[in-house]
Image 1 (tube, rainbow, N blue to C red):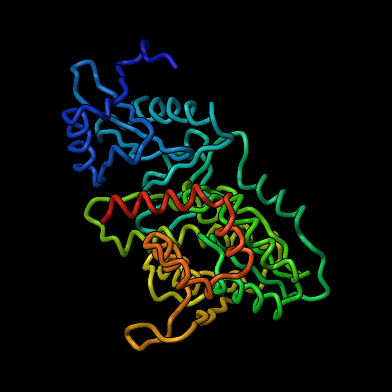
Image 2 (cartoon, rainbow, N blue to C red; image 1 turned 135 degrees about the vertical axis):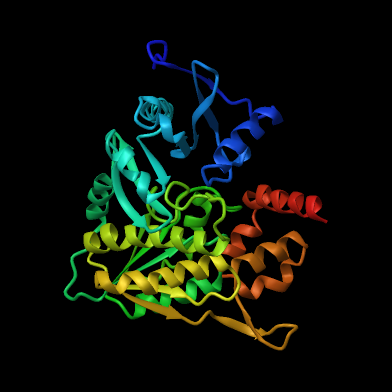
Length: 362
């Protein structure tokens, strides 16, 4: 894109220069955003001919972030220039790009070709643009759809970092109570255990179940694009987490549920992670209106912990025990497929990663 014929000039932010970072931080703070340079892949800055900072935009992977133009320049070409330039950079590597923005600014993105796919007022709207869209994901889902005699069709979304007896219990319960179970496995590799390994552990661990269909989540279910680490100034963590969860669940309810005919979604109760807890609350609020019942299953417990409470199985406990070299203590919490992997040479890189993190935090 050529900016020479406009009334603006642009440059990319040097994120290693604290002065430049503070300059952008100050501009975005005035507009209600907390800018974190380490949370973006690149930041574009636009100045007018008087060298005043009048707009900025950033991107992370497939997602546009922090796109803001000063009020008196919003009727100019500054906004579309920022969005078009950053979108081109994303689409050079990906088939689609997302933007997570405030609902009142969504109209600006719609005006240059973005399509809104979800909204959680008053904080968030999610829009997308590119060579592929959520309609393409729905088309792929239809290829996985199994014809059933009843409407007893369930779904579970799991990460399994790693796969535990708790996950296995939830999947077995849902499968036993349903004609077909669609098991969505988080595809993005933001976890200690890579997607390919997580999927293999699950496949081996549930090979005895013949009514489970495993499906990749793609970029639309619990993904970095739809559920990003994105913070707004002056908003509490709780409200941000709640509204991000609402966006994710809206997409599941509006696009995934009708495509596969899902009537039930199973989740485990959450005692530890507040993000997952917010996600469960969003499902209780949104799914019933889409004809999908939320079934919350009490977490599987084994024994009593040091506080004389039931010892719930969790993947975070497994990872902590691995970090602290207490693997023998948690073997009974793992299915054979996970134990076999963790005892094999193929798991060496995961052990090293966890031990390295332990050294950095001890």
